[in-house]
Amino acid sequence: MKPTLAALTCLLLLSGMPAKAQQPAPIGGTVRELLEYADLHNPDLIAARYEREAAQARVQPAGALGDPMFEVELRDMDRDLNRVGSVKYTFAQPLPFWGKRDLRAEVAESGARAAQGEERAAATEIHERIKTAFAQYYQIRESTRLNTEIFALMLDLERVAQVRFANGLAPQQDVIKAQVEQTVIKSELIALETEAVHIRGRINSLLNRPAEAPLTEPRSLRPAPPLADLDMEMLEQRLRATNPLLFAQSARVAGSEANRRLVERNRYPDFVVGVSPIQADDRLAAWEARVSVNIPLQQETRRSQEREADALVNAARARQEAVASRLLNELHQALATWEAARRQELLILEALLPQAAANYQSALVGYENGNVDFATLLEAERQVKRARLDRLKVQVEQESRLAQIERMIGGNL
Image (cartoon, rainbow, N blue to C red; front, top):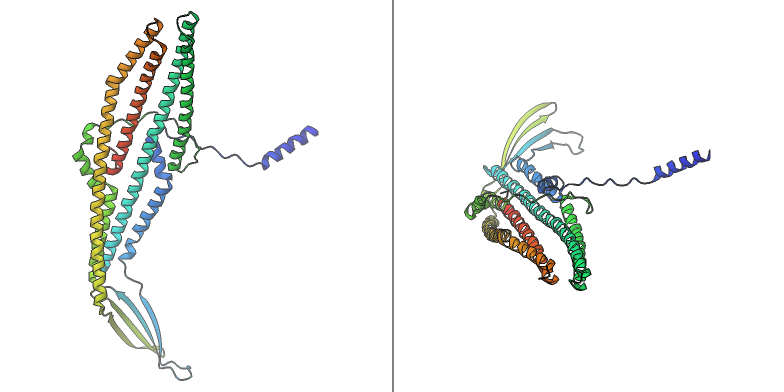
C-alpha cells in the first residue's frame, strides 16, 4: 500500500503545479519570414490597420442624409386637458444644399486614403528596422564564426611556437603571445554573444514575441539588386509615385481642398422639408406641407472659416513639398553611402583579402624557417581578420542602405 499511496501523492502534487509555458518555435532563417510574421503580429501595424478601417468606415456616413424627424402636436385642447380637437403628425427631412453631401464624402475619402498611406508608411518603417536588425544579426553570427576559426588557428600557432621553443628556436614569449591572442578572441566572443542577445530582443520586439524567444540562425543576406534598379532618376520617380508618406500627404491636400469648397458652400442655405397629416377625431381632416431654410446671415463668421480653410490648404501643400524634399535628400545620401560600401567591398574582395592572405602565408613560412618573428606573424593574422570583418561590415552597410531606399520608394527593389 505504501508505494501506491506515494505514487498517488506525487500525481496529486504534479497536477497542482502550474504548466510550464510553451517555448515559441524558432523563426527567422530569412528576412522574408520575419517580415511576413511582423505583418500579422506587430502591434503598430495592427493599430494602423484598424485606423485605416475606421477611416474607411467614415466615408459612407459622411455623404448620407441625416436622420428624419417625427413630431406629434396635440391641438385645440380644452382647459381641463380632457379633450383634444386634432392631432398633427409631422415628418421632416433635413436636406443640405446641393453638392454638400458629395463634398463631405470627398473629404472623408481623402481621410481614408491618408490613413491608407499612413498604414503603408508604418509597414515600410517596420520592414526597414527588421531588415537592418536581421543584417546586424547576420553580422554577429558571421563574426562569431570567424573568431571561432581564428581561435582554432591560434591554437595551431601556439603548438608551432611550443615546438620551436622546445627545440630552442624561439623564445617562450611566442607561446605566451599566442595564449594572449586566444584570450582576446574569447573576450570578443563574449561581447558578440551579449550583442546577439540584444539584437534578438530587438527583433522579437518588432515581432511582438518574448525577448528571449528563439530565432533561427540567419542563413544569408538578401542578394544585391541589379545596378540598373539603383539608377537615381528612376528611384526619384518611384519615390514620387509610390512613397506612402507622399501618398498620405497628397490625400491630405485633396481633403483640404475639398473642405475649402465645402466651407464655401456654407454661404448657401440648407433645407428642411416636411409633411403633416392632421387627425380630427377618427378621420384625416387635412394635410400640410412645409419647407424651411436656415438664413446664412453671419457672413463674417463664414469669411473667417473660409480663410481658415485656405490656410489649411496652403499648409498641406507646403508640408507635402517639405516631405518630398526631405525624402529626396535622404535618398541621395542613402544611395551614395550604398555605392561607397559596394566599392569598398570590391576593393576588399579583389585586393585587400588576397594581399592579406598572401602576407600571412609568407609570414607563416618565414616563422617556421626562423626568418620572421612571432609578432610579425600575429600582425599578418590580424590583417586577414580585419579584412574579413571589414568586408562583413560593408556588406551589412549595403543591406541597411538598401532597406532605407526601399522604405523611401515604398517597396522592394
